[in-house]
Length: 73
Image (tube, rainbow, N blue to C red; front, side, top):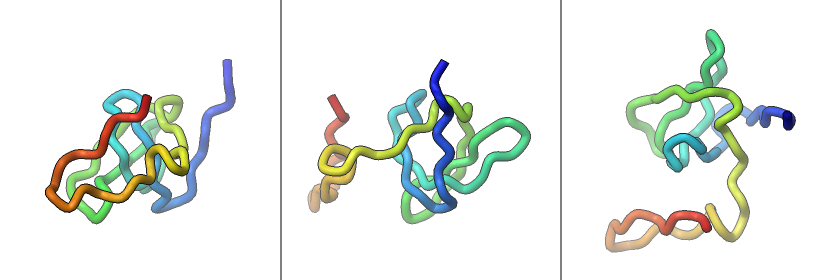
């Protein structure tokens, strides 16, 4: 079993369960609390489902036409 990644507060991470990118808020009662970048409704996931973003892959500029980012391969 690997080491569970522990992000810093407000760090952007990927929720492996949903594929969504979120800002790490805290870990409380065994769940990681994330929120969409820029604000919005928080969601929870398991600590072992959080991974750091990969520079150049996950951190691409947003599409000015509002298209969602391409999923990481």
